[in-house]
Length: 348
Image (cartoon, rainbow, N blue to C red; front, top):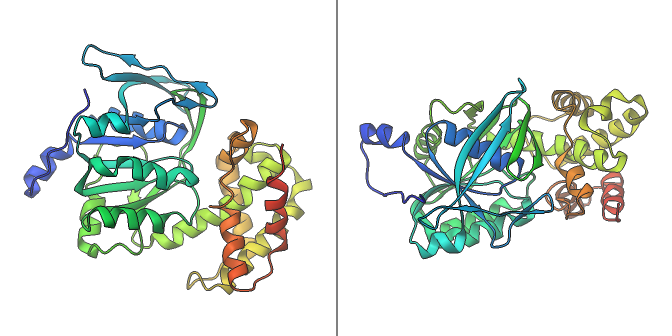
């Protein structure tokens, strides 16, 4: 059944008690969204996937199983790294249904494509509580400021958290997901949040249950982690599309190394010239970081390659496109990234 969170001022004891009975709402039924839905349900929480009116995943239409209360359910099947198959039944609903039923959302995860994130958030704003926490697991950058503005227009007490994950997940078919690489998710408050540091840490620390099996931790300096993931995405994602290869092959095949190094050199130059972080990053360090992630997720098809294969829009604006935008604003040459954008904007 689609549950409603009751918003009250809570003592620490009440907070601990309610932690085990939270209701979570996830927008985005792709690989990461389903992975998190399974993990939260396994930890004993109520989970609802918020679907589009006519939803499809990987080009396949979704049909819901409706119970006698007119609420829909779906069974998520998770294939683990040990080739074990696990299942979890979760609720599904559209944003319109949740709003119509006066559901109050206290905890929401947005796991959509970057270009859909703001629209997804807008769709459920009427259902958000005045103190809701929204966790964005979207790739890339450039959309968070608009998300924050939407949340704070709704209520100054709302908080936007960012999750930077290196978990590998592969969608075989709708609601059939494989956990292909054990990673780590760093979670922290969006940098311009008006919430005090103590409030940010308290909310983040108690956000996920103690028995949540995906590895995660609070990261106070999320800015540095966010940019590291961003730069790695700028290397792996576009090149796997151009060469039509899985992540591991980028580095196992020596013929790509020169191209990768040249891209890393340009990216590190842009990053360091913009003084984005007090600590500079060398092209060699970026190469090694990207290589480590590619090896860890060697058998994965990058999200951008998967989108290209399915004929979907690529997340260019939030990844390499965002880098080009920043570079051009400051008069920094970025011919390699510009050429990547030009190539990726052509039909495959």
